[in-house]
Length: 328
Image (tube, rainbow, N blue to C red; front, side, top):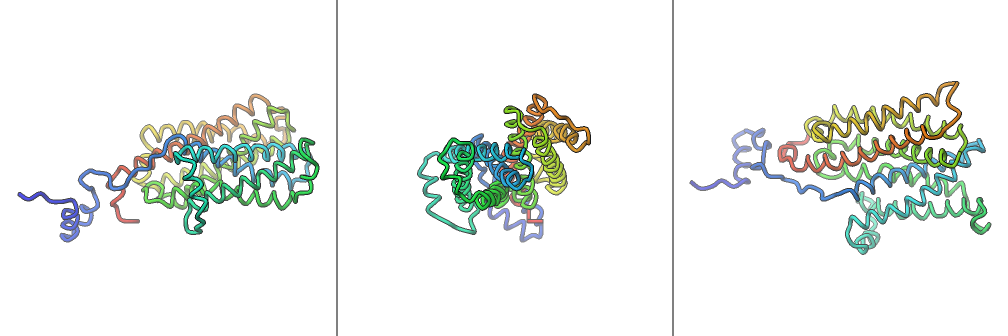
């Protein structure tokens, strides 16, 4: 008996009217090539989110009339620049050779999410450098000539680029053929932005708590983090209902348990319970170890979310049924 090839099997099922059978399997073999992404990509996404969120916080602090918020402007500017220096290193480490990063800068394509992301990272890094130089001049640690830089304009540029960096990684994932990521094309970018803002608030709250920053500024960060975390939780739960079978790897099994324990409960619910007190009339006036621990939980939740998202995407790529199912 002549063996039937996979292509003939698929054509035969379709010709016989059994379209469901044609999209059930490819002889049990993966149809898509899973992305070979490891912890370096997860770290790149995580660092990029905090970096972009800190750029937004710097602009908000600049626009505040409360002089106490100048400490937030200072911490977010320095944090943005520090992470902007680390982020390309993580990307180059993932690419394997530095020249690959250089070659990506030789092309500018508006229709390429990856090309826009690399150029966005480059522009953000330069704007963060200018903004940090202005801050150094204000702190008396750089020539006073840097104070002549247009702080307001540069701050708005950094905020815009920061919002782009916070969401572009979600767009990058959802623009692929990986079933889970493609299914989340409306959810993943929005979740990424909310998670980035919450993580940036947590990171800056840790910095301010360590240096003895103003209590009312830290309370403002906690309120903003609360709002961002609420939005992230709602979007995650809605994505769980929307993803269907494509989201099983993310919301069930050991990855689903990690997402539930370390992100939904540890990284969102517990910090929200604490940060909700920032809205109370008699809110805490001291921000020390408790603020640091709660903010660390938020950062943990943001990192685990990205780890689970990457690993679950790999698992969905290995499932031929998900890859061959017609779009819904």
